[in-house]
Amino acid sequence: MFNLLPRDTVFFSLFESMARHGVQAAGHLHELATKFPDITASIQRIREEEHGADELAHAALERLDRTFITPFDREDIHTLVGGLDDIIDGVDALAKRFPLFHVKSMEPVFLKQTDVLIAATRSLDEAVGRLRKSRKLSDLSSNLIEIHHQESIGDDNHHAAMSRLFQGDIDTLEVIKWKELYDLIEDAIDGCEDVGNTLERIVLKNG
Image 1 (cartoon, rainbow, N blue to C red):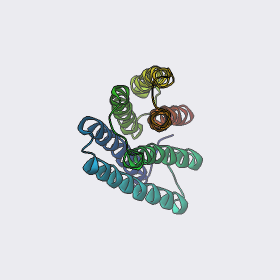
Image 2: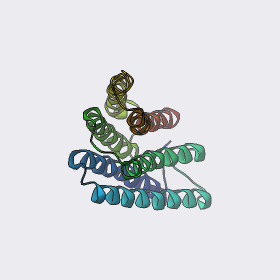
Image 3: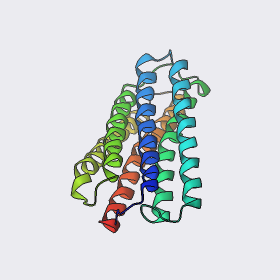
Image 4: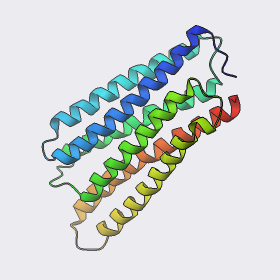
């Protein structure tokens, strides 16, 4: 049950702050794609979001280690924190690839994927916010359905991008670069679905 002592609400604040960092990181990645090749500021902003999320993750895990009464199972808290952190780490790793790979132009489908990631992180942020008070899966279901919907759109975009890359008229080095970039943003979108599944499990176990 969600019968918590006042101090336990700190966990929910940490989850919510991490989710907001995910939304911000996705927004900065979209900015990177739209402003390309002027990407230095966007990369730095994503890096700052990653640092902020890491600090929150460490704080959550330290609190988990010293708190006797937790909102729900310790394993689920650990999984939730790790999943939220992984999304932002993935966006940071992706952004760093652009200067590393000397990318010369922006792929239109990649820009579409940044829109998908924004929508997925926003829905995830709303679902995490509802976790503080919710005891019913139905209270989170609209957000979880939207995350799954965005993941499906992301899959379709990814397949279309792979088909275009491997049609045979693109330089091999460019194929290698863009395959990794597309795979990384796909991983970030999938990460939102993974966290959504974690939230679903938590609510079902504690409702």
